[in-house]
Length: 431
Ligand SMILES: [Fe+2]
Image 1 (cartoon, helix red, strand yellow):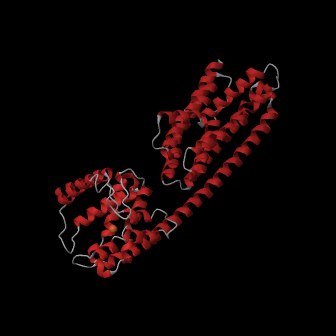
Image 2 (cartoon, protein in one colour):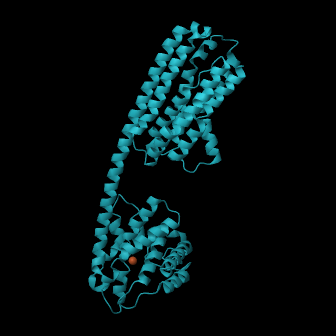
Image 3 (cartoon, helix red, strand yellow):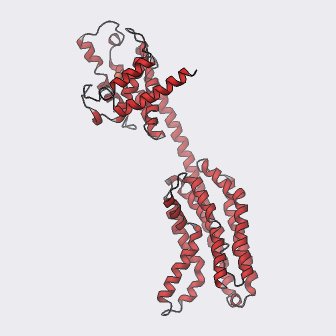
């Protein structure tokens, strides 16, 4: 008899497990490994009761014969489970980004509360079957469209607090109230009757504790989300401002030389594409875009007559032009908010074989961002018209990049550049 009831209890508890895993995956773990699933099952709100019962059984088996008072402590199983659920919720929250932790803890506690409603064990099989297995199954089916889906859509939109989020605690609280009434109804059993006073106080107090915890969760989550929104707005404004300033700065170089018109922007775009294909994150590629945009900033310090000179440059003029990486780095090192900004300016004329300038460093000694900009810079220079020559065709520029791989350019970066050129030519041909 007890065994069948225990099975119903387990079924009821684990009915919510797929919903919990689905929410977790959708909300913050799109790529979940097999071990990840196992880990989340072990710390799930559904495993909390099983684990707290197991722990209590171990303690009882070890010390029960010595201290019969332990039996009375078993009446507080809800309290142990609640404590374990807080520990698990904390571990669960550590697996996602810091800014979303309060949100996922909130989701976890709500799930726990919903599972808790069905954690009462009943003496007769039919009540057990209906209350422990059928009721959670029906709740689970109803929860998906009305509860899980809105929560997932909220978390997808970068965890914003929406009024739909209140569905979670309200559902949980309503189910708890239901549990309270079921408790009162089950007072007809003689065992329950003898503990009548205890259950009255215990259930009321427990309900209050849960309510306080829940509203604490809502308060913290709301505050955190408001904070995230403010920070994101500020960041966006700052990023826009920075990019506007950098573009204005680039405009000053481009204004000096008509042949470089749009060059910095194009190099920045190619560099970003290369970075993305090389596996950089979105923010990493964005950073490379900024660095590349300013790679020729040192040209500001080069006199106009040298930059615009049509004929042959004298040795001295040539040396002056070659000083632009150092001049650029000097300017950009002043911008302390972006400590990497100078890397592109300083090293974009270094060559893979060490024959570049200003330092003649080679291979991996050159920062990768500079190797990327070097290829993008060369490709754009080749495919743009100059005062002394016409623009290369895409085919010819491709051949040059291929030829320069391993000598002028990083083999990895030039390989990716060739792919980009091929994609580009394919699109051009199919037009
Ligand atoms: Fe340059």
